[in-house]
Amino acid sequence: MKMRKMVDKKSSQPRKMRGMLWSGAMRVKRKSLSSTLSRDMKEKHSFDHVTLRKGDTVKIMRGDFKGIEGKVSKTFSKSGQINVEGVTREKLKGGTVQVKINASKVMVTSLNLDDKLRREELEK
Image 1 (tube, rainbow, N blue to C red):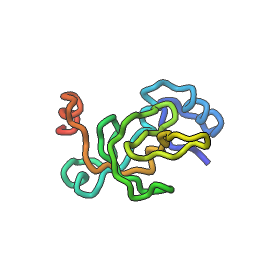
Image 2 (image 1 turned 90 degrees about the horizontal axis):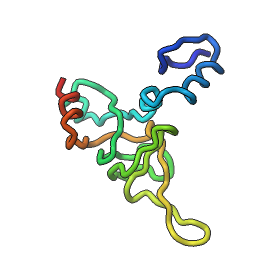
Image 3 (image 1 turned 90 degrees about the vertical axis):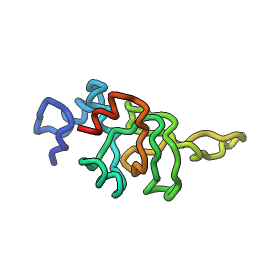
Image 4 (image 1 turned 45 degrees about the horizontal axis):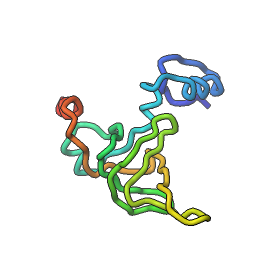
């Protein structure tokens, strides 16, 4: 089974494609941080997916924290995961730690448009 084309190079061997993803450039890994937009956002903008950034508001669609809505506090482009404000778990020795959520398991409800370049990119 061939993997989706996420890198510039092509190979028919899945092991080579996996290797290219993990050892690839950050511009390639950044694509793993994309998430779907809500229906309202899809109608407003002319696309379905967007790369997540700090400050975007997301709703968790899968997993133990399903239904929770919060802002993205940190992104991990190497692993394709994010931290969402208010999503924590207790440690065995006491204290709390933020839970990493896979970016594909969330839906974007509002975008952070503080960055001028991102705003221009969305208006195209």
